[in-house]
Image (tube, rainbow, N blue to C red; front, top):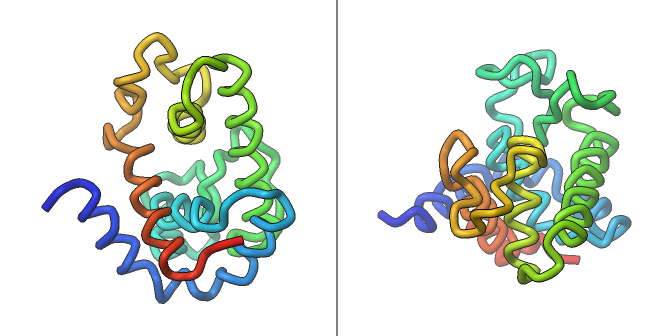
Amino acid sequence: MTGVEVSKMLAQQDLELMSKYKKDIKSVGKALRLHPALIAAIISKQSRAGGTLDCKGYGKLDSVCFGLMQIHKDYHELKGTAFSREHIDQGSTCLIHLIKDMKNRKPDWSEEMQLKGALVGYMTGLERVPLDQPDHLDSETRTKDFSNDIIARAQFFEQKGYKL
């Protein structure tokens, strides 16, 4: 099984849980002009649509990251509850800022590469994105394929109605 196939299989497994948040994901996506499938993909990857969160909304394996989108409590003032629209808005807004930052830092990169750089920044912090190695953007992520995984999951969620 390829990495893309695994990503889509995991997204499929998250689809039922994700349906609880579909309305909020689409609403936030519309308000922020960020593709809902991308938001759903991050939620799927980061918290398995909430399935890997403890009773307080923190990651069972990462007690410093909060909510569906796993926002790091040491770097951000947390907004909303773990499963709220406000939380989804906060995580999505963070990603938008990272995308804008990548566009400013690397205007010569394609939009896809800028997005991948922003996704790596979402996971590791922008200072750890290897800007001088665009072919190895995921080298600093734990799974070594974070951005590609997110994009594959987003393609799956788009086919399941997570559209603007």
